[in-house]
Length: 405
Ligand code: PLP
Image (tube, rainbow, N blue to C red; front, side, top):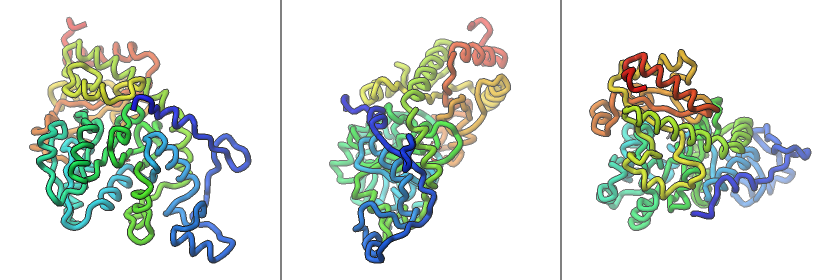
């Protein structure tokens, strides 16, 4: 893994536009002509390399982005989709059918949790939710019907870290697929290089980075992506969560600056996490030595991209969390908004927003407390200045005592 650098893989892609443009041309068509009826038939059968049929299946613009994201994750190929959920749900439905079983981390994005808990059972797919950091518990949950082991590299919102290499060993032993959502840690972690079978992203977040679209991707083997796109039985082809070509072209351009952005997000988050912790605020950030999985994460990351831009603090109560977020927004330190990976800082209280699908008693059990604020730290040029302003907000609201200067 040490000599795999995902940013180099992105840099090395050379795409020319149709008229010699420096960006690839956008394929602004939903359907494609054939000069012979025989080629159309062959394309339907999947035997006409390089021919396009209909853009729900694939389009030249989407294939450029597929190729770039596969290069970034070190997988054979990829399939972009209209949203992260549009990547996650077909992937799971492709791997699992009636009577099958999933073992999933219990601290995952609320939408994925709701899909596995409430929706997948309608198709006869059951899920056992486990503490993904306890490898013996993970393995014990696997049954003869288990097809998928599912986790997020760094979980949403509690920032638990999955030991991907160890989970991959368990998955191989039981002949099941390890599916990893790497949305929080692009470039920093390369799950496929650690043994994951399938890597998923919500492109909505860091990869696009400008909070102007939703998007997703499944990075996997050619065989699995062919299965997803199969005209007779492919979950992506038949459920139709296709990304629009115009959007994939714009995400592609943003992907080119991801390495610079990730370094700045990580630098800023590390700075603030150190400062908040020193101020006596309960701070969770994988880059802090106090994080329970700090060592696991340290051994897993491509170090130059750091520990990412996500952190949480606990200010004691929902009222205080809400007051702090409102004041920080008023002082232009970021936006009170869900999502992540934006150039400005975003903050939200996960218990009442992105994880509200998780019942209150389960939130309590997994340590998702009322006073928790999730930060997606932005690209601020002068993070010390940001810290001083945040610190002033905390003092003004009595979250920090004045003498804790
Ligand atoms: N995975 C993670 C870790 C997320 O945080 C999210 C959204 O917040 C998703 C998946 C879903 O992605 P999308 O909103 O693009 O469908």
